[in-house]
Length: 252
Image (cartoon, rainbow, N blue to C red; front, side):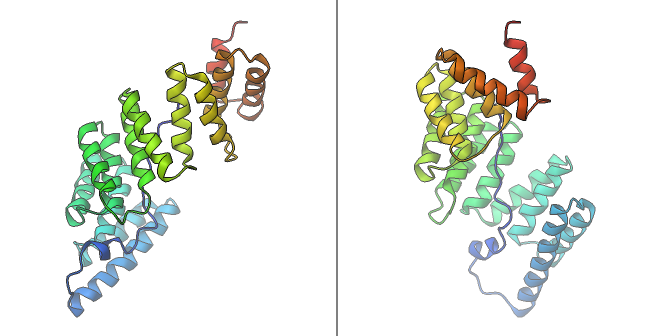
């Protein structure tokens, strides 16, 4: 089962404006404008895979304005990408200090903490994200929280979070998929199938979903449907570890 936590990154420009409504001097306004330009360039270089150039631009952004939330958030993501967890943590934490009530900032920090195995701290950040009345994607925080608890094998809490994600966004594919997987683990195969079918209705085809579909139909005794999932897995993902898992569990 895929376990992925989602970041709200780009496009997050303008996030810092929400964090502080204090009046700014002309010099600070110029510094912020310069920082915004360098963050935008840093983001562009990150998207192009030019990480050294991206780091240079983001460091310049922070030299212009060390209180710019977006700069701390984006450079944190970059440090995480280059496996510098210490600096990533420093900048995620600083972004949260600058914008303690901002949903996107707390969601990002929570996702990082979860990846670092700090479940309790991550849960606090997701709760802070969901407390933001202006947070536009609460389903993302619920999904990240559910994924975090799923990694810890706390299925009931994960299920609760994924269901809340679907209450706010019925088309959240990650929540649909993970709910199907949880219900399969709980031997609730009919409901697992229902959530997987909703996931598949979005037109998403991946090896994890095909393997799960095969396993659900197999447990329901539907050999034809199970075989069709297996056929698709062999055809569409012939080199996947999911296919190797299927074949290793299938009697020869």
